[in-house]
Image (cartoon, rainbow, N blue to C red; front, side):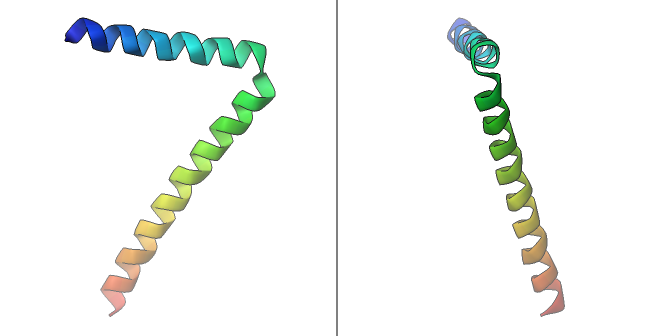
Length: 55
């Protein structure tokens, strides 16, 4: 099963490189969207713990 994981990761990397080379603007937008989603999640968790601490 270890080789399946390596093949899957390799395919994802190749696809990401191909996408960055052929459509750099779309790739940048996808990365910005992913970073924005992670940032919003971190802010939400922070608000949760702040609210929990002040209650």
